[in-house]
Image (cartoon, rainbow, N blue to C red):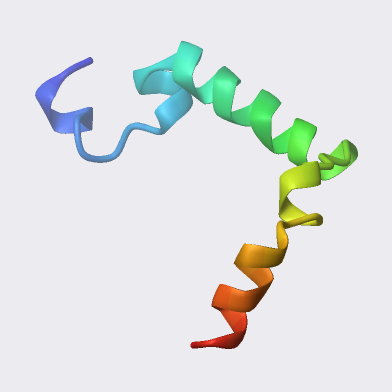
Amino acid sequence: MSQSGFFTASLSASDPEIAKAIELELGRQRHEIELIASENIVSKAVLEAQGSV
């Protein structure tokens, strides 16, 4: 890449591997559901602590 294009080049031109990884992650987030049980079920102590704030 020339110096003149350094500030104007797209990510896919500068680093195609990173651009592809970001594209794949965006697709994963758009088309898949991610369920994390720890975000939905908490202990009694956590519920008590949340109520004290």
